[in-house]
Amino acid sequence: MTQPDVNWVIRERFGVAESPVWDAAKGRLLWCDIPAGAIHALDIATGERALWEFGEPVPSLGLAKNGKLVVALRNDVIVFDPATGVRERVARIKHAKPDMRLNDGKVGPDGAFWVGSMDAAPGDVPAAKLYRVAPNGDVRVVAEGIAISNGLAWNADATLLYHSDSRGSMWLDCWDFDRATGSVSNRRRLRDNDEANGRPDGGACDILGNYWSAGPSASRINRFSATGDLLDWVDVPLKYPTMPCFGGADMKTVFVTSLNSRKDGRDGIVQFQVDAPGVPVGLFG
Image (cartoon, rainbow, N blue to C red; front, side, top):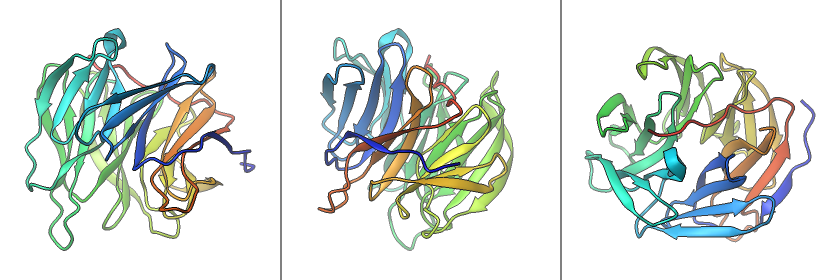
């Protein structure tokens, strides 16, 4: 792949801009700023912006039915109506340690919200988990022993689920996925990343079966095959890219969020064009 032109969408510093989601119905990009406890929206055509604040960390979000959003907070998964401001708790997660919180989350093809937690405590056995939160509030533990759960993405026919750990051994795993039941099986290790190649952060899939992964330690977006081979990467002007997201009318625009570069100036959201469209996001409910 030839290095594409990478352009700024927003040049602005966020604490940790994460979880970009393309809202095709409204032609806008959504993302959260985790420590600021906020969700941002940008109308790509008009430049109009919106902001909703929650008073606690907002690690991730997804689209829900009827124009609502499913949102991960520190301990809770809620459904939020941007039009009215009404919040409805779906589930509460009880963490193993008091300083833990939820982290990367996405709506799966099964209509559930898949969300992991993070355990930032050094030296301990990692206590973070990956959860499946059903629309009716049922919570299933999918995986345990994780430091920072990240990288959730599904392939186009919803037969594979990708998942990564951004700390420790920094691995990328894959499961076989059953769309009808939301169950996973046959977990396998695709690769162990390192800081030089870009520790695995947020991820997304294109319709050809490739997995795109933010590599914040290398300032790039890696493109892996379905079996974990590093095919190529896109260098971005962000110091710490956090997650790619496919969007635009043809789903061939990749938007990339970033975390605070600590006065480096390489902060904000960028975009670039690719040949293969991304897999559309699901709706919670």
